[in-house]
Length: 364
Ligand SMILES: Cc1ncc(COP(=O)(O)O)c(C=O)c1O
Image 1 (spheres, rainbow, N blue to C red):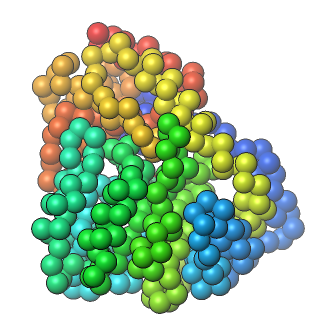
Image 2: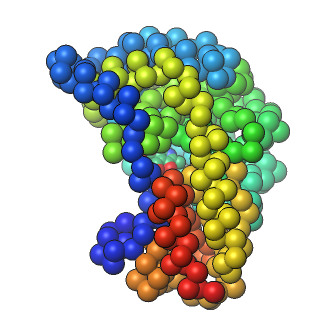
């Protein structure tokens, strides 16, 4: 959709990336480390200063003690963390539970490892997990479950009750959790992010994945990290070492300094909440139906009052004829499932959102 948006000079609210600038302070820190000569390979698990800063952040936010030597690895983005985590523990015929709609990098990594994705649909219209349905799909072959909160594309979040139900369901099993928490700071209405790191019984069997690209408005840097108990991290590093070996050095040093000031990430929920509220305000008179997103920088809207075209056809027409690009939500299902939903990314300048809303007004 980004390519189509570029071809038709449409406003691109499809792919998930901000169109505003990274904090100048962070840019100049990176510049400093470039100039100081920190330009060679970083240690395989990541620069220790950064791992220590991450451990401190996890402690402040989730009250957990993470060992920076053995339980944290810095990765080239959340995607490499997810790929290496899956391939390090999934063997042929292992089953992995995925909730759909799902971010698109989970299933390919499972299949490359010979594993079998087991798809469970999130409930409409608010993308919640039906835990009774989950219980029925677990068997002796279930090796892993992948959760994602705040959720892309649905914008739903796990509640404390979800976490407790999850804990109860997997308590007496050997299931490994992969918790994709790349939107941990993008959560609204004073809700708190429910990380697996807050739950001692979950943390001991989880890979938890994070992305500095999402957190610091710099998706093009591809820097993230993964947290796991030592036994899982040992397996992870066996793959990570020969997959990429290490992650961009000067950016790691800069992030280590930048993370020391918690204000650099604590402002994010309010910052994005304002963007969500503004976006919802300017599209509220359009013939869309939506449940306000609770987390992530995506808003799904139902367009069935406007058209009965497939979501893909409608998204293409919206880009070409109205000049606004969105992602058809059917793209997040392994078998096309057309719920007449589009996903808009509102991580944009006020002006970009307003220009898009102006164009969309022609749908009325
Ligand atoms: C749910 C989810 N997980 C992981 C990623 C990948 O993060 P990164 O860009 O750090 O590789 C994304 C990026 O869009 C995402 O939406």
